[in-house]
Amino acid sequence: MSAREALFEHTGHDDIILPFQIEPFGLRGRLIRLSGVVDRVLGRHDYPEPVAAMLGETMALAACLAGALKYDGVFTLQTSGDGPIGTMMADITSDGSMRAYARYDADRVAEVPADAVAERSVPRLLGGGYIAFTVDQGTHTERYQGIVELAGHTLSECTHAYFRQSEQLNAGIMLVADRVGMGSGAHWRAAGMMIQRLPYQRGLPGQPTEDEYDDRWRTALVLMSSGTAREMLSDDLPPDRLLYRLFHSEGVRAYEAQPVVDSCRCSNTRVERVLVSLTAEELEDMKIDDAVIVTCEFCKRAWRYDDATLAALRDAPAVPSF
Image (cartoon, rainbow, N blue to C red; front, side):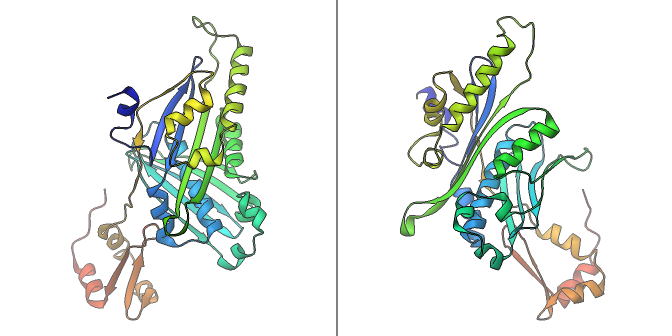
């Protein structure tokens, strides 16, 4: 087995986070390829195409950013705005389990001009608001959250603004999501690429000058931007070959890929813990046809609780919270 074949032996070429490094000055990056994961999430909700495309990009962005962090828990990306798409949320655990959903106004989405849809225009689709990044590592660890205004034409530009303002780091990001194929074979794919410039360190053996480091960073950005949407989403161009196509003149090294899976964390226990915390009046207000229906916004799984089931929940021993 070749080194290239071994790289993807356990993960395949799709639904992965592929870390890489651009030589020789240590520019780090991640390439995201989502296929079945994004197609199942978007298909489950039957979103209008503008909403599906924006949520696909959001999923790719969440994977890009999560892949840059060392954490044990959940990374969440959420947008909130006053535009046709009011909310988008995607989260991914440290072991690669991903889920996502969007809330939108169907009438307003239908009125967005075709050119704004094609451009994935944040001002026209999301409006004014914010994008938040949260890392939650459990109840005994402090949550980290970064928030930045939706002040860019695309999600990539909004994220660039976050890095400039909040992290003082240089990062370049490309995002794309689209339906590919024809007829019954059409399916959604999404991809993302992110490169980061590490802080310059003086005095290290073999270290370039700061001007050389700046030049190499600008070159890497230009090379990344030469990638096309078709290449990023291609079924036929393996991710390592795409990296070679873009960065072979500088030297690029890919590392072991992390798989991404479509998986929701909803459960009976979580739902019932919420229900037993509500008053009888609140539960009565929630009833539809004499039952409380709870539907997960992420995976659309639904639970039905009639009066007898609710009474049994109230009488049961308290569910411990961990």
